[in-house]
Every structure is written in C-alpha cells, then in structure tokens.
Image (cartoon, rainbow, N blue to C red; front, side, top):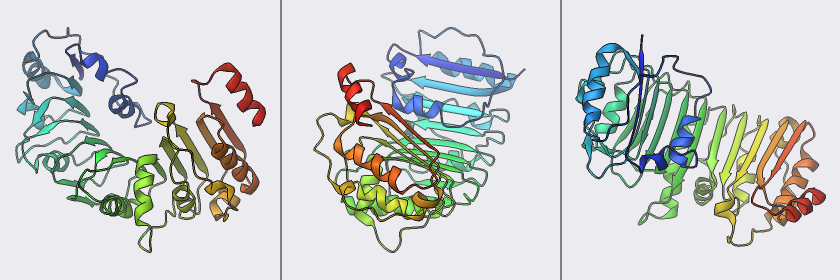
Length: 351
C-alpha cells in the first residue's frame, strides 16, 4: 500500500503547522480535490532531526505517495537525494531549513502537487531543475524571499499556481495553457523601484490572463497601480476575482481591474483586521460616480465581503455594487469578528 509520511520537527514547527501561519495554512487549502487516500505511515516525531534522512530513505522503496516535511532547525538539513527519483510520489510539501540540490537527471513522473516554502537552494538553477522534473504537475505553490534563483515553469498540466514573496527578475513561464487558478501575494523588493516591481508583476500575469480564477493580495494590487497602460491584458475568461489583505489602499486599482474582466461573475473581498487597524483613512474614490464595467452590470451574480468593518469606504462600495449589478443574486457580508457587540450592531443597522 502507498505510504503517506508527515514529519514535523522541533518545537518551533508547531508554529509552522498552526492554522494561523499563513504559508502553510494557505498551501493546504490550494487544491479543491483530495489527493491522497493512503493510510498515514505511523512514526514518532524524532528527537534528532537528522533521522529524517533515514526515515525518508526507508519509506521510498515502499511506494511513498505523499511526503510533507516542515523543518525549523538551526542546522540546514540536506534533502535526501533518493527522493528526487521517486516514481510513486504524488504530493511533496516542504517548508523550512532544507537544502535542495537536485541532480540534473531528477525525475518525479507521478508528482501532481508541489509546495515549496522558504527553502535553501544549492544554486540559482536548483528550483527550475525541480520544476522541470515534474511533467504531470497540476498544483504548484512557491513561497520565496530575497533570492536570485531562476524560475522556469514549463509544466503543461499545471492547473493551480500560488506565488508568494518577492518576484525576482528571472521568471520564465511556458506551456501553461491549462492553468485555471492563479494566486499572487507579491511583496515589494527593497532597492527596486515600485515601477519596476509593477512591471515584473504584469510580466508574470500577462501570459496567464486566460485563467478563470484570480486572487490578489492588496499589496500586489497596490503594486500593479504603478504600471497601468496599454500593455495591461484583458481577462476574457475570468470568472472569479478575489482581493485579500488590508483593503485600505488605492481603490482605483480594483475599479480598473473590473474593466479588464468582462465575464466576471464572482467578486470577493477578504479583509485582514490585523493589517487594517491603524492604517490611513481610505480615499474617497468610491464616492465618485462609478464608470460601470460590463462585468458588474451584466454578469456579476455573487459578491462576498469577509471582515467587514463598516467604514465609509466599505459602505460606499456595497452601495455602488447594489446600484449597478443588475443580475446580482447573492451579496454575503461577514462582519469582522474583532468588533465589539455594539459596533457589530451599528454595522448591521447601517447595512
């Protein structure tokens, strides 16, 4: 029977595995389908993290199907070389203080799910070497910060892509015509102008404009504001658009994207209160008459807003959508749970 091996090492890994820790919790919910039916391989958590290599090597010959390793250790651990030649591995999720040094002939012929978070790579080509070894990959999540690694994604079967962190310059995307969903949470790179950051993000998005679902952090959307122009693509197939994070930023970016998605049917906002409190007062862009995009007037059927605080800008947004969305069927607003009872009551009355 195929094996599922999950190891979480050191006390700090309890934090990594917590549902509130965004990299891991976001990765776990990326793909809608269940991908492993194997029974877990029962092993105790090791007191010595260097036992990881021994246990993984022992599991590989028995048809290991899913491997999840969250390592938070002072010493960088070399990822077991034998894994790079697994013919049975379907899901590989790695986070933490691992060093990845894939051989040139690495091969994952069955790997469909790959999540890589905050890892150490042997050289600038290591990440691309891993990606090129996955011919049937469908679900990819990359979480990178301040690295100069080359990223070459040429995975024709890929359907779901999450990218978090700093967007480096050397990103090549090829043969991604089957991509369905794209999630971007790009962070600003220090020392790089915001205009250059924006150009990199648009260069990443442009060949993926055929996706049906797009989720953008508000930081990513704010970056995009600095490079509007004739080269901004149309999202002709976009069915669902979501914005998440601190929603106190330049609203005209959201309004602009509405006009680039003529078939949009689902619009979602998810505000993060821990990032919202103490932010500057929102601008008044929603008080201006809204140039009604076709998607809002003729196609938008569902709108969700999670983390609603009831401020002036949010109320105006809701009013505008109700005013112009002629075929809207569902408007679901979830009031932020951090508000006091009286504040929640005031928001409900205002709505």
